[in-house]
Structures are given as structure tokens and as C-alpha cells.
Amino acid sequence: MAKQTLLTPIVTASLYLFVFGATLGDRLNVLEGFSYAQFVIPGLIIMGVINNTFANTSSSLFMSRYLGGIVDLLVSPVSPPQFIMAYTLAAMLRGLLVGTVVWLISTLFATLPWESPLLAILMAVIASFLFAQFGLIAAIYAQNFDTLSMYSNFLILPLVYLGGVFYPISILPDPWASFSYLNPLFYLIDGFRHAIIGVGDTSYLIAFGVSLGIAAALFVWAAWLIGKGRRLRG
Amino acid sequence: MSALVIKNLHKSFAGVEAVKGVNFTIHEGEIFGLLGPNGAGKSTIINMISGVVRLGSGSVSAFGYDNQRDYRHTRRMLGVVHQEVVIDNFFTVDQALRLHAGYYGVKDDPAWRQLLIDRLGLTPHLDKVMLKLSGGLKRRFMIAKALIHRPQLLILDEPTAGVDVELRHGLWDFVREINRQGTTILLTTHYLEEAEKMCDRIAIMHHGELIALEETQKLIRSLSNRQLSLWLEQPLTELPAGLERYSAKLQENGTVLLLYLPSGEGAGNILSQLVMSGLKIRDIETDQSGLEEVFIHLTGMKEGVDSHQSRQ
View (tube, rainbow over the protein chains, first blue to last red):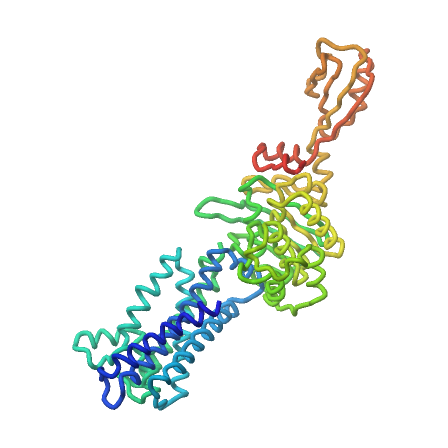
């Protein structure tokens, strides 16, 4: 189980770190005063957090629905808030563990300045909470495994890649730079990187405000679905 | 106090009414059978009681608590063994039982857990993951899981479907034992012979409606025809007059007269009438039909009645 939940994302992140930290990194310079590895590592950490929190809630809940094990939970006195928090906290734990391990491995390639560590941790927590909610919602709406994988392959993956993990939005020409501000993941990635290296494309207030707003909206949506038993209870 | 009160329960799926205004009460301490052919609405009712399915309309209360308003109270009092196998494939039997009590806010009670493990014959399989268990073991595990938080009402939805005879007997013995210890039982089964032996009262459902609800023996007595076989000294070539209401038949070359006594009627009247008409009777045999006949009579169908298997 640990192989799938921890080892696989760590291997993926290590490959990214090797490619961008040890090989291409020396030839790239996207932000004055920082190596490319220092720029890309915060993005890779938050990408690990996002992907793994989403994978945890979405696959756990969907598999429970698919295999029927959800019934054990539905007949128990577990309340909707407990239901949500059980899935959310487990997913956040996995996401934050993966993020921590990615950071530890990244120390082999670059040293991060850690300008505001508490804000960075807070943004990682918000990101993991937000994607835990999104995973719950996706698992409730998904009709089958194909629909579930579409959420990660056709929604999360492009938004992460276009959200500034590998480049600062400021280097994009218009209208691409403007479009990027519509990407909700940009605020998570930028806010996290800003807290670590002290430089960002947008202010803390906007990055944290937008991220918290989206997290709250998704939580209300998930709570409504689970409270009403939509697609869970017949 | 009533263990369960169901009032005017309705449920529709995609415009099709699966449960049509069902009412019944289960008394504390009894074994109550909910029977009916496939698709009669039994599992839908059980799922509405346990919370797997939302109520269409009507109300369900367990031990005085409404299962919508006080759902946490009611669910703590219920233990449910579902018709489908519901297990977590990746846990061992032991891990799953330890974890399951936590869903009910109950601390793991090692003595009670061990008793369930022993009584359900799970001891040699504790370290096996669910995926590796046989069908019968999965069923036994599900009963242990449903009882781990010591529910006051145990709901068994076809708990012995596909289970071999020996295991079925063992499971029913155990159910009787926990019933004697005070747990109320609601069960559905296709094995009518077992329902007849197990249940204090029986409700029969058909097409989403309750068509009978009575004490088991009273239900059988009131709805079944007693068969009366008369062995005659002299064979008859034709039926005596006046036996129309008994659906009389001659068998064994006219040496056996077969009569069906309408429910509630004793054999005395018809015997006197036959003797007075000069018929010489050598021997008499009566045969009371069982729940299976009552069930078929009420539901008008033989499908779904696994009587053949029940006799194996």
C-alpha cells in the first residue's frame, strides 16, 4: 500500500528534480537571483501535495462506492462532517507527507531560502484541504474509472502545468499571462513559492484569499453532497 | 417498548413505486421475519431502516428514536448484515473487527470480540485478508461485524444465501442464542422452512405491499388448508355427494378419499357426515401445510421460493 501511496509519487518527483535540478536546470534561468532548481522545487512540492491529496480522497471514496464498502459507513452513526473530515485528514496527511519527502530529496539539488516557512506550510495545508474536497466531489460525480481519471488527466494536470510550476507567469506574453490569472491553481503554486523564495507573481493577500475562497466553496459543495447523501444513498 | 415502528413507508425508484405505504411494528425481543418474492421491496425497507437508502415518505423509529432526526442514536442500536457481501478486501479479519467498533463510537471490547470470533468459527482465519476468504467465511465475518458494537436490533437480509447447510444451521443457532440474550432480530430469508422455525411473527410482502402479518403458527393455521386422507374399507368408483367445498379427490384406485379442510374447520363434521352416509373408514391421516404453501397461496407465485434447497 505504501508503495502506491508514497513511493510512486516520490519516484516521479525525484525524476523531475533530476531533470530540472541536475541536467536542464543549469541551462535555464527564469527568475533573476535564483537557480532554476530553486524556482521549480516549490512548484514540484505543491504539485506532489495536490496530486496525492486528490488521488487519496477520490480513489478511496470511489472504490468504496464501486466495491460497495461505503455501505458500512452509511449505516454507521458517522455524521457528514465526520465523514468529510475522515477522508480529508487522511488525504491531507498523505499529500503533506509526499510534499515533505519531495522537499527532503530536493535538498540534494538545491537549498531553498525559506523566507516565510509558516506561510509556506499554511499554503500547503490549504492546497491539500482544497484538493481533498475536490477529490470527494469528483468521486461522488464519477460514473466509472474513466470519468474519475478524466478529472486528473484533463483538468488537474493541465491546470498544474499551466499554473506556473515550471515558469513564472510574468515571462508569458499576453493573452497567455492574463489567462493564467484565471487558473485557480496558479494562486496555490505562486503563494507557496512566494512564501519560500520571497518573490511571487501576485501578492500574498490575493494568493491566500483566492485559495481560501476556493477551498471554502469546495468544502461547502462536498458537505452538501455528503449531507444530502447525493449519489451515495439510494 | 417497540424495537422498530414503520409507519406509512413509501419509496420510488425512477418513477416505479418499490414500497407502497408499509406499516408494521417489531416488538422488543422477538424474531421477526420479513418475507416475499424477489423484488417485493424487502431489501428496500431494510435499506431505509438502516440508512443506506433515503426514505421516500413515512417514518421509521427504533426504540423510540426517529431514524432521520436521531439518526446517530438509531444507527448505534442497529446491526445490519446486508444481502450483498460488504467487506474491505485489504484488511485481515482481525483488523477489520477491531476497526469496525470505532465507526459506532464504541471502544474495542476484546472479550466480546473474542466471543464473536469463537462462536462464528473465525479463529483460524483471523490473519487472512478478506480477499482470501471463502464465501461462507465472508458471511460469518459480516455477522461478527454487525454485532461488534452490541446492537439491540440485528437486521439480517438474506444472511444465509449461498451458504451450505451445516453453516446455515450453525448461524441460526447463534442467532437464536443472541436473541435469547435480548437482541431483537429482523430477518429476511428465502428459506421458508427456516423462517417458519425461527420467527415469532412473519410479515409477507408482495409488489411493495404488506399482504400478511401474523404470528407464524397463527398465519399458517389461518391460511393453510389441512389435508385429510381417508383410507376406505371398500373402494369407491365415484365421489360421494356434498363434498364440493372440500375439493375431494379419489386416489389409489378409489381406496383413498382426499379432502381439503377449509381453514378453521375441524375434521369432526365431515367425518360424521361420511360415516352416517355409510362410508366405512379404515384409517385417517391429516397433513398440515406449512409456510411455503401459505407463501405461495398469498403471493400467487413459486419463483423466488427456494423450497427445494431448504429441504436439502
